[in-house]
Amino acid sequence: MVSREILRGFIRELNPDWVYLDDFCATDLLLIWDIVDLNQVRVLSPSFPAHRNTEIPPQQRFSMPGPHAAEEWEKWESEGFEAIISKKVRELVLLLSSDLELPETHSIWNFFGRIPMFAAIEKFYCVPAGFDFPGQKLMPWESYSGWSVRLDREEEIDVAVGFLVKKAKSKPDYRLIYVSLGTVILEFIPKQKLTDFFEKIVSIGRDHPRWYFFVQVPSEIVTEVRPKSINVHIRAFLPQLHLLRHADLMVTHGGTNSIAEARLFDVPILAMPLVDFMSSQGNCARVVYHGLGRAATLDTPTEDLCRIIQEMVEEGAD
Image (cartoon, rainbow, N blue to C red; front, side, top):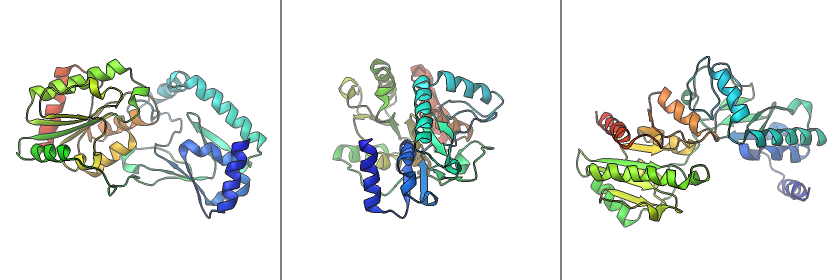
């Protein structure tokens, strides 16, 4: 319990007026509930409400609203990402809440995977209500707060990126396509499968010289993905905001921040629902549901992927 005492000592020293907890750290509330004003605690979630629902599927599924949602919940809770581990963690957290005598008024009433959800603790979902599926039910202490991203953050834009962006925007029939599947994707997708997907993008770029691809590839495999034409730019890191300001299309795994930034810059989205972890699949489903883009997978054949991209960048030009 050394970590508990360190955290409690930190709270006592700061004596904060407000306590904000990220969803991932929500369990920490069990360790400090008796030394803070629970009315001044807020939980911030980058995801959607995670209430079992007969019409709205779990956000870890690429699925639309409908009567099948109950079955989707059943499958996810028994077969989903780390389902067995999450069940054990939930049991331990409930035991801890009992041992630490968490008040009944703020008891754990639900879990999002292994993350506890506390009654009567104000919680903000950092997405717009209009991006969620209609009919979502919130608890009285829950609300949507809208996107939580900074569009004014500083980015390093090197000479090569700056030059190629200008080139991509130099003619009306050129298109700028930004591809990023997140920074931790290799933790979930086999290396070869991911490499094969990026090779598809490289091939599409070679066959379509008017499309300028900026492709962010994980550093572990970036040297294995070689461009075959000057209109394909591959890096382990790219300035996302700068590219989205000019992009005609974003290809993304559906991370909340990436979706938010694409929406705020009004960039069409080609969503790739890859893993049933957190809300990326649910984000992708909502992109399609609200007509903000389309979806594909890593296994989508090259010719089909090319056709989808072509249709989307031409639609964006209308």
